[in-house]
Image 1 (cartoon, rainbow, N blue to C red):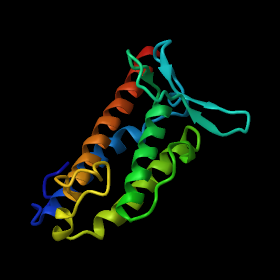
Image 2 (cartoon, rainbow, N blue to C red):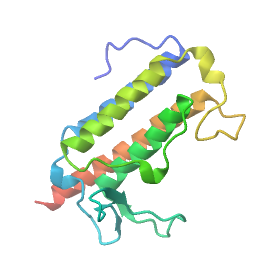
Image 3 (cartoon, one colour):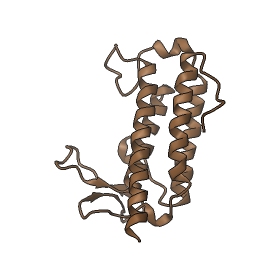
Length: 181
């Protein structure tokens, strides 16, 4: 899949290459998600999204992480990607991000997949606007109070967080498909 891809010649090119690789692995699962996958609960102790009285989706949440941590549904992981990515994009653009409670989930199926792809497009605009010199600036998020963390750290964190969340969604998708047999 990655044969013939040019060797990155700059640090920005390397970060973009890593992001593209991560996204291609995520896309493998996004293309195969079924609407029923999103709210499937693999065990009784799950975090998911639930419709409120106003018709909006709200994620299960605790201010202090419970022990054990509930198993998230694909819907919850997808919303979580949307929350941290929206926050990161806004910080990278110098804007005040919305509160966690203001990041809505569009619902399962194609709407959720398109929402995530839209976040990817917004992130690519951020990446494409950076130069190698920008990578050494202080990180606007998630380490805005740590002068030793740079924009390069933020980009690496996005790639790692996305890879982790893509693996979680992929594993949940595979478990649901296998349990249906």
